[in-house]
Length: 448
Image (cartoon, rainbow, N blue to C red):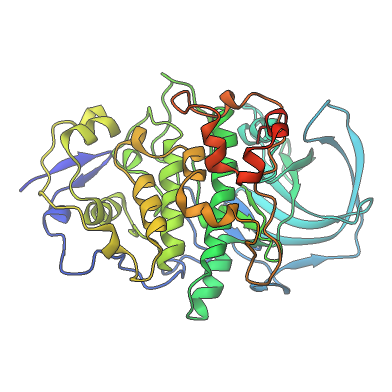
């Protein structure tokens, strides 16, 4: 019997008995969380989400009380009468601590890592999320370091941070004061799924385009998110603005330095991670984004599975058995392998009959075994699937105008965010509307 070690798991019999009698579509039937896992708890990182803000490495449970948003009810713990004043440091700019007061405090997520609150700033009356994380004094907090350097319209903003004492002696918590966004792509998709209808394709386009913009930005900063999934994509249900959140797993990748392979939530793990690679690149985020796109189109995860073996089986059922070269590109340590030879399933048969061909095409370019052949974020933005967004008449189902998608404002040269293999200025003509791409002012306002 063919058998190969993948990471720390044994694969053999599971692959040799793959049931190919079905359509090649995923086995699960809905967006519902895995059985016995409230809040879609991650198998890989214990990540969970409640109420529009990721609860990080928590396995979060919801507290008591209730509140509602556009796509469902949230259970919350409320302390609305208390005003809390802290000395906090701004998330960006000079370290100039200042007093910050907030009230209407509600617990929206908690777990082993700490608590996530929703609160209202006294000065501006704006809602914020406060992520309270137990701090290890031996190490700098990687999430704080990364969030302080990020400034992008499609990334949740770190407004302030401050430290607080815990109940135990010498226990210190880091508090991250973040933008509060009421929903997640996960909950929006589940809303349509429960209504037994498909999510409007314009939402899929708007959400995915903004996700790729956020990835283009963080990857240009050398940052890999390492936990892209619908629960970490915050959205405003009225404006359709998307913000990437939860950088608790993110890391500044350095070539030659090893990374842990047991990262990223199940269903969204790139095959090189399943194969135990430690020298992976930001292309793992691209695979995860492809899984998100496929999930929105299907109404369910494309590669479900409770273990690496299960997920690899599901991937092979769609992509076919990886070649020796593809295995080498994912992890050189596994070039000697024997897998049952399974042919790739046609992408058109993976999705529902009326799925737009451009959406299927984009999926196929994101979900490739070889990491370097996956589209870059900006190449994805230039894909024909997003052509509708470049039309001035495009609107949301409500009739509202689309969110700003082409507000490139960073003064840095385009060459800093475009791969060297992409010629200029032709990519702009693909990414931007024609009226913008041909404008003489666009070159002075390029960026994020």
